[in-house]
Length: 363
Image 1 (cartoon, helix red, strand yellow):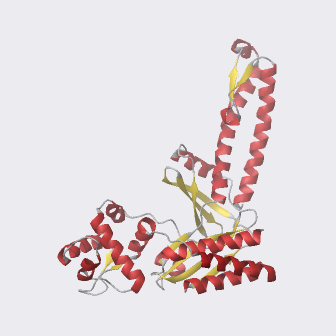
Image 2 (image 1 turned 90 degrees about the vertical axis):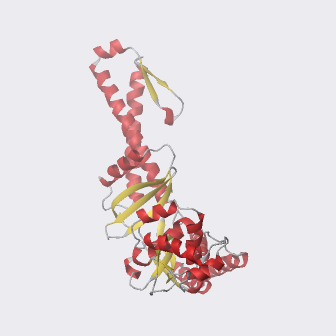
C-alpha cells in the first residue's frame, strides 16, 4: 500500500478566498497557469495584459496583496512577481483545476502496450511496462507500489465532505495512511458515520478491510437467523405479525399484548427482537460503508510537504489505485515530478493507465 498523507482541510484563508468574486479568482488562476507552464513568477503588469477583463496594474497589485495575505501566493524576491504557495496549488487543484481528457491515440497506445506486456510477462513485467509508458508520456518519474495483501488496519474514520460524499481515512498498523472518497446516501447523518467508525475501531485492529467485512457479514447473518426464529415463534403463537415489504422495511406488529404480559418467555423474545433489529441496522450500515470504502475513488494528488517523502524536494505525486480481479486495492501507480506538473493532463492519464492495468491483469 502506498503511504498517503492526511486529508487536506482548506485553512480559514482559503475558505475566505472561496467567497471572493471573479476578479481575484481569475488573477489567481493566471498566476498558477503561468507557474505551471514556465515556472516563472508573474507581475502585475504582465497579469493586466493576460486577464480577460480590463484592469490596471495598480488594481492587480491590490488583489495580489490580498491573495498573499490569504497565503495563496508569495513573492520569491523583493519587487518580484508572485508564485503560488503549496496551499495555493492545493486550493487550485481542489477547486479550480479543469481536468483534461486523454487523446484517442494515447488511449490506444496505453492499451496496446499494456496488453502486449501481459502476453509476454507476468504482473511484474506488466507493471514495469506501465511505469515506463507513463514516464514517457508525462515526462515524470513513474512509480508503482504493490502489496500481496491488503494492509492490516489500526483505525478507520469517516468524514463528511459533501451531502453525498465522505472521506474514509484508513490508518494501517505500519503507520500508512490512505484516503478514499466514498459516495454515500444523502440521508445518512454525520452521527451515523461516527457511530460506524466507533463500531469498526472496536473490532478492526490487525485485520484487513475484507476480513472485517466478512466477519461483520457473518455476524449479521447469525443475527438475522436468530431474528427469523424468534419472530416466527411469536407469529405462530398469534402474538405478532409481519408488516412492510422487503428487508429494508422490516416491521413486527405486536398483537395480544395482554397475553404477552402473562408469557414471560414471549416478553423476553420480544425484547430480544428489538435488540436484533437495532443490531442488524448497525451492521447493515457498517457493511455498506466498508463496501464503499473498498471501492472508493482513488486518484490522489500530494503537493510538496503534504507527503513527507517529497517535502524537501518540492515535488508532487499523483497516484491511482491498482485493483485485482475482485476490485480490491493491491497497490498504486503514479507519477512524481516538480510541483508545477501538468495536473490537468497527468491526472486522467495516471487514472486511465491504472484502470487498464487492472482490467488486463484482472481478466
